[in-house]
Amino acid sequence: MARARELCAARKQRLTPRRRQVLEILLSSHQPLGAYDILAAINRDGEEVAPTIVYRALEFLLQAGLIHRIESRNAFVSCSDPENCAAAQFLICQDCERVAELAGDAAGLLAGAQDLGFSVDRSVIEITGRCAQCQQHGR
Amino acid sequence: MARARELCAARKQRLTPRRRQVLEILLSSHQPLGAYDILAAINRDGEEVAPTIVYRALEFLLQAGLIHRIESRNAFVSCSDPENCAAAQFLICQDCERVAELAGDAAGLLAGAQDLGFSVDRSVIEITGRCAQCQQHGR
DNA sequence: ATTTGGCCGTTATAATATAGCGTCATGTCG
DNA sequence: CGACATGACGCTATATTATAACGGCCAAAT
Image (tube, rainbow over all chains, first blue to last red; front, side, top):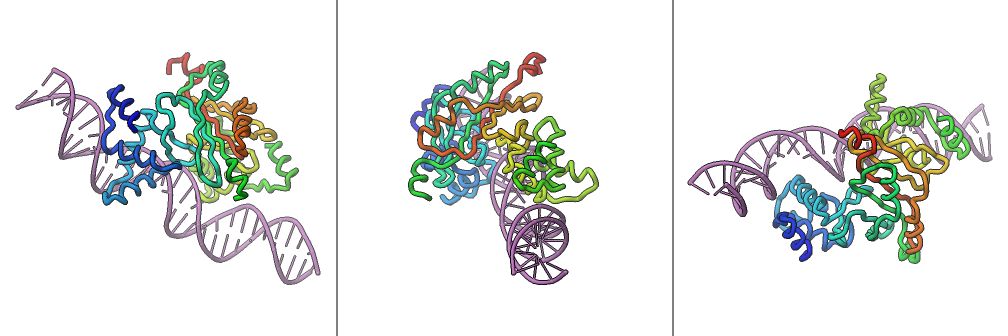
């Protein structure tokens, strides 16, 4: 969160209270949340806010690289390394629903795309399965 | 399409007329289609069918490995190599909307996940950007 | 002080997806 | 053959996810 502030300040982007609130909710969740989960979290605090508000904050946080969208889940998760989050990869456990973010450059994948003359803008790498822990526990 | 029939026959899966129809629509589109696009294509032929019908056919085709879902687009596309489609990768052009499917095993990515004790079920690899052609044409 | 641009809030609606139930077809087994 | 099980289909309804369009407010720049 402190880093998020610094990053935004450095880039002259405004990390407004609303945006902070949404980021805070995502940071303190240890699993991905849907937009309407975030909405519910806000409204649980007594506010009565519309979806569009949440989506706008999410859009900002996404473009700022502070969060990621898990496409295969329609969900959002805070980025573990905002300074350096160009090409994140996720391991998503079907059982415990936890998401691990792998850093690193997707090996040669993006390079391969660029070899084909393709100019990469954004990559989505999501691997679904069962984590080691859930396999052990036979869940 | 012929191969789809063979595959289903070999596996004792029923490629019913409805499923064939949906697959046919996807095969003859050279870009990904949303479920409601497919629905519209069916209804254009004079039928009056509900979304649920399309989603059911899509679900079957997905699990049969005959089509893929493009998660970042909520869209579906026929698989270019159904015999061998465990881990597809897509290059998605923002300008022309075309999707190229790369075969191959995602380099060491999946192996890397497995090294962590993660048992892989399904992988989504979608790279968005601009294809060589669209870059040239300055679109 | 005025303008400008960005953010917020409101209302409404669009787009995507699923639930639940009854029926009919197909295949199985006595 | 007939009874039954299974899976596919179709219908109605509804849930979930996401965006459009407009106006007000406030902070920063002029």
